[in-house]
Length: 403
Ligand SMILES: [Zn+2]
Image (cartoon, rainbow, N blue to C red; front, side, top):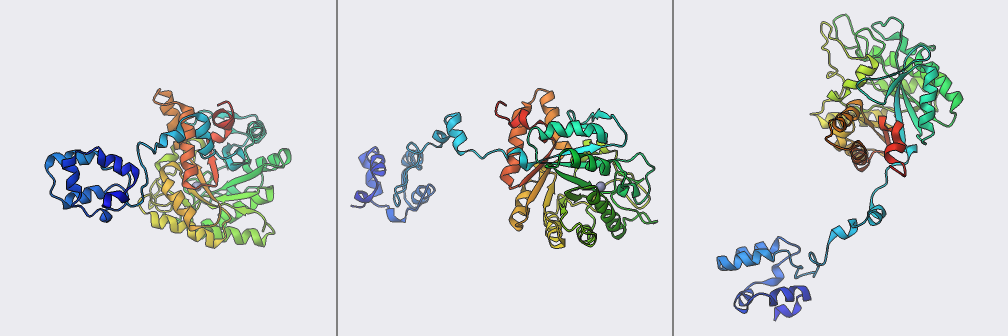
């Protein structure tokens, strides 16, 4: 009899069924039943059982498989692996250590300036001298790197020439930080938008169109200026065609062949940059022939293949590190880039993503610590190697031992 071959669990189940109903099973070709759960439904479909039997049998569709005898509920209970904090800690992924975090921050010209950015509570604009204190607090938490964004108090122009002023706020800050914190990895954002009079990331031609080729030259000059000040990593964020190749060759030709190049390789035209533009004063303005958004050069969130291609090209042009920005709205893209490259992948948890959690917590709609930890883990799960995040400055508060 076929039933003799079934597992103990299965027999228990069958014995629990009244004999009249059990007889119905004799007509079923049991070996046809395949693992795991849907096959009872298939079996039932082929048989002419009464509606009453169908109702009973439905309850038992999740019994052990006849073929392999694998147990499910009530023997298998996955909640056992989540029962206590200790058990969960054994198997949970770890939050990356602070060495795998990068703190982005803002440098303004002048001295003794430390002003909170209203749309990014807990983040400040620093002059180079006060930045030392800000960075010290971050270094003391073990954070491995900082990413500097600069501003100028000189007149802005079409090409953003103050970006490569060797006496600019970023260049000064890099020199100071390099002297005070020789172990800290110093990264600099390389872009023109905080220095152009129209707020776009490239010079505009007289007809208002964006000049990618001229931008590459300006970006290369800016990167060289940062590298000369001592930056370990230059990070071009302008999303200009060819910018990585231009900067890589400029670095090599000027004896900065060991400077790392982190490409903002898949950077989306996102609505999440609002607080950052507030902090940087870098919102693009409309000009004849050029709208006030960056959709014509930053990646479209509705075209993932084109966005992925940007990262592939930047790798070919000589980037050392690729990046997806923003992070939380683009976890699928972090995963996609991760699967396409063997290079490190950074994720930039942007200002809007920072501000939205704070706003939610302020309204009493969630606990800030829980929100920060959960959202951070999603970036880790997506496959990011380096987390660029404003939360880095509060690492111990949210991820320390006693948080
Ligand atoms: Zn820019």
